[in-house]
Length: 420
Image (cartoon, rainbow, N blue to C red; front, side, top):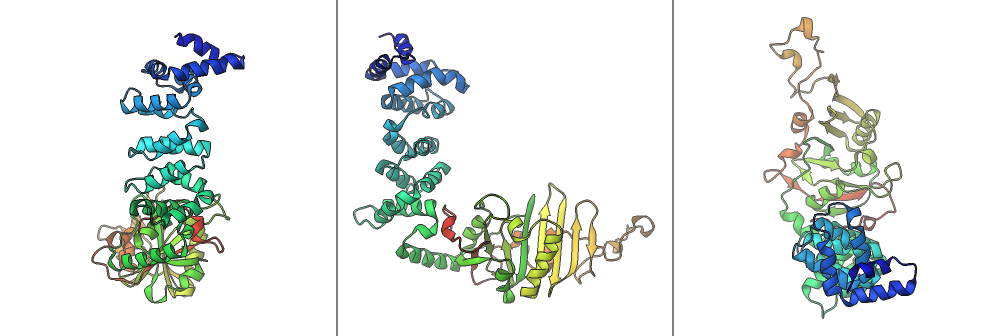
């Protein structure tokens, strides 16, 4: 058989010739596909793969199997296989679904990429998703994309599978995880939501909190544990729910809904009481605003509701180092540095004054009388809680809260799983 002539027929304007060439190529796929793949050895650009990709797409499902077999034997590279497997149509939908459930991360990702491209809604695709989430391994990010893409269609079937007595516990767990990945905890039925809430409350009891590090950049607020309830109204937070520290931190660092800007919605995490203080983490632009005036206004507003409030902001790349303390609606002490440090308010009792440095020369250094020496990383430990020091020795009371920055959105609008 002359492969070259069949490939020429493939490009013909005569539909009959094209169909006949496709049938002959598919009939002899066992020999044709390996020969085609030998021709891509050393090819490192997509353009160089195009002739083979066109031939493989014409052959269809048998070529899919051939490419996958060659990939498993390492006869084609990961990069080549990823591109070659993009050419198949709906006739290979079940093969993409089977590949999505492959225990190998890269191969599973390729399977989900195919399902997403084809927007496949099938039992094979649904079960590929379930088996992936049931595998107890790192889930390809494309799996969550697929769960979100077809969530409305998959949700009734996943809920049914979740409580199917004939399904294995592993498959039922995978169905639950796929539901959450597609539509958040709100995708679960009442029974599963109640079970999840009970699990969260159990986890909270034994959790050792770990907070985000401020290395390179970070921000947070601190309010007294006794009066923290006011922070929800002060920051315009809605629909709060109990949450573990692990899940709260992950959610607060997650992506926003909608476009960046005034209509975006994010999640804020209010920690349990830590050595007498509650800390707040979340999207800076939505909770605080743009420096500098918004920072002052925000911390003063929170202090009106909570009696006392602190704000810390760090950006090592930009050279920003800020801490602000407010009481009853008025800033009493502020440090802000981008180039030259600026101090406002009277020094606090714990501060070391820059002017007390025995090496300072008042004639040339011109150190303000209220200048201290502490940046945000050291001031936080004196003022309230140092996030980097929170751990087994921290006195933890109560539980954390996860809240939204806008009303009438619901936690289910944030699809994806959170580690609890």
